[in-house]
Each structure stands twice: as C-alpha cells, then as structure tokens.
Image: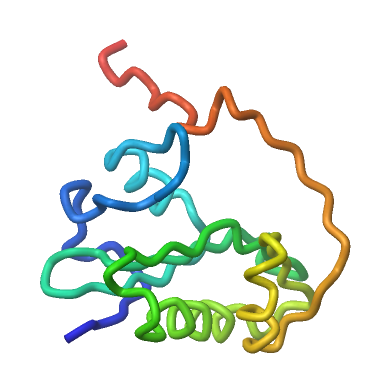
Length: 140
C-alpha cells in the first residue's frame, strides 16, 4: 500500500533508486537525497520502504513557487501516484499568488487536469551540470 508524506522521515539514499529515467546523466541517489533536503516542500509516495514517486517545490513563501520535479517510477505510472503527489503539493501552495512549472507539450493535459493552465515559459539548461552540483567537500 502506498503512503504519502511531506518529509524525509525514514528515507535514505538507498530508497531513491530508478528515478530520472531517460536522462543521459542524472543525480546520484545521494544527490537526489540532497535535492529533496534542499527543496522548500516535497511530497513523497512510498511503497514499503522504497520511494516510488516524488515532487518538489521551491518558493519564496510569500507570492511565488516553482515545481521543478515530479517523478514516478515506471511500475507505478498509471496508478494516479503522480496526480496524488501533485494534488498534495499544490494544496501546500494554495495560498500563493503563482505556482509555475515547465513541462513537455505531451504532459500539459495532465497538469491542466490539476487546474493549471498553459503559458509561455523560458528556460536555460546547462547539460554539463545535469547530474547535479557537486556536494561540498566535508573533509576540509
């Protein structure tokens, strides 16, 4: 049975495998844990001890938020896990003026079904950093 939570209680890097499907390079499980820790808000879907889906938000806490990531493991797609993660995350952001995200055209109907609408977006991508920024060296 899938349970949902908004914190990292009981979650370690070993519970974060199989994500970033199709990325030529992607964050390690340890960096995935770091990005979850660094997010203002998270929603996690957990089956047993394994994270099977997650969504993240960054926000100023006053007016604006951005949702950079929503990922669901392939075996759990089609079971409304992504929809529930987004529903929970958007509920946490409901009192803000704007909540933005960028997605591929084929995903727009999914987000429209959650009450979002299409808009023009601009993005910049540094593919050399796709695996993530290096963790600080804690030995120095």
